[in-house]
Amino acid sequence: MPTNTGVIVKQTTSTTIPLKAQLEIAVVGTCTTGTLAASTPTRIRTADEATAILGSGGATDTLPQAVALLQRYGCGNLVVIKGATADEAGVLAAIPLLANSITQLGVAPQVVVCPSFNSVDIVAGLKALVDNIRAIALVNFTAATSVTDALTARDADDGVGIKDNRIVACFPHLKNTDDPTKLEEVSLHLAGILANLGNYGQSPLNQSLRGVNGTDVAMSLSYSSETSDNEKLNDVGVLTVNRDFDGEYVVWGGRNSSYSEGLTDVLTFINAVRARDEITRLVEMRLATLAFGSHKFLSQESNLATASLLRESFINCLAEEASKGAIKSGYQVVFNESLSNFDAGILDYAIEFAPWLPIELIRATVKISIKVGG
Image (cartoon, rainbow, N blue to C red; front, top):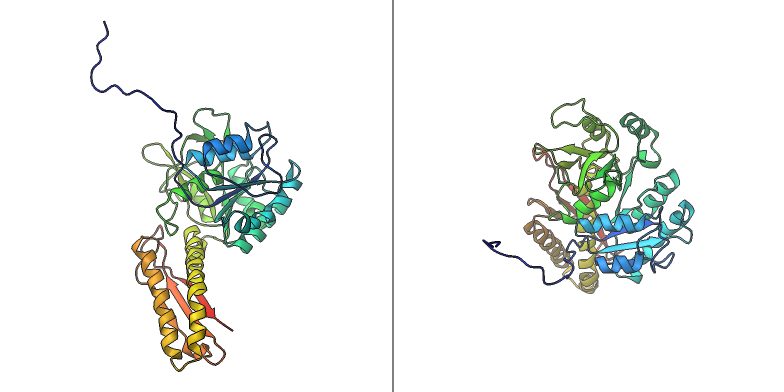
């Protein structure tokens, strides 16, 4: 007769575990099953919605697999879109339509991925989109690309090799733990990792990858060797992978594709660009509520007082973000009186703050120029 000891746990419900990661991620791709309408940004927040909207996916469909991978990371704020045709032409036509998600869904994508598609035209389309909506795009080298070919492609400055601070080039593909024949893009894993960071100012460097146990091409990986493949890729601005001391795969690199070895520009860091975008968005929100009042006061004698009031509002905004750990303390807001024109209703400010960088010996400052009115 069996004897039970300890605590017996019984499953009494099939309730889906909530997807709590709320970073706005947009996925462009193909899907021939489910109910997803072509050329229409559509929001997916749960696993059940993914099943209903995308179905099980056809053999070459990219959206169902991509969404499933992102939901592995708990992503619950996804926007998907497919083109009128299930090919590159359809995907290319769908990319700019993601801008409509802001008005149609009230969602402003901050990260855009286009799995399996990475031609020169696709990357150019992604760049035009992310420049427009103030986001970053993650692109991946094609499966089976060698390290040598990836390094060579970076010199071309087009396609996945493009040098741009809103484009993040990723390499290689990863083998799924449950099915090693199933390959997954590092770009999708990076999107999931970004969604799980504590804040937008944190670097993804050395963050753990979920559900993978190998790379699709042979790579030498090291934390210390300058000649290892992962270090060579990182030196030219390609985000790649490494293995930690427990043998787990982690992200290696926190740079976007504008980086080249030795470059010190803070905006070569993924999180610096994201921090700049988020602070800009918060400043714009404050201007939307305060600028009208400022213009009203500008017609009175207290012009400088009004300018100081708006400066204090910006400082409070940065203080709130610093308290969350999104940026470092030591931020500043300078009112440029010499560049302002009270009579014309123009106020000029310089905002400076520092994101958290992988190497904290360096203090890199992001600068934003704000002009109100005019």
